[in-house]
Image (cartoon, rainbow, N blue to C red):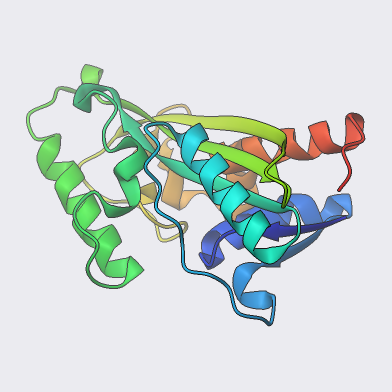
Length: 206
């Protein structure tokens, strides 16, 4: 079954494809469509679920086929859930993805200054939605990945806030996990495996 992924982020595409391709799904990212793609829509939702739904419906209507969209980010308990749905642009929209990531991580470290170890719980959240061109939502899922915020970045894998989410039970950061191992336990891996399970076991077709 063909699934169009509503993202141009190669890291997300790789993580989703690594789970779905072995299950027989053909995963196509927006830049791979070979035709004009509309600009990203505004995402005014206050939850990850709302924003994933907005993107999925928007791109499905624009492209005329079913689309999978995700919305993901970091929730930090000591910051009342921030950066949350603003994770990607928490420290501003200017610059490349790498530059935004660097600013976001610097803001995270500064925001957590003085927070004791026992109050540093945080999690990555990923929600996914598949919608059709008529606006119907076929399936939605959510995955979470728990850890604690570390001041010092560790690891060279992943992207975004990965170097600062430390996993006490494994003794490594999210960015120190090899890609295959990360896909087994990450928020995105959990959400996409749940999505594949619902599609296949409920025989959802488009």
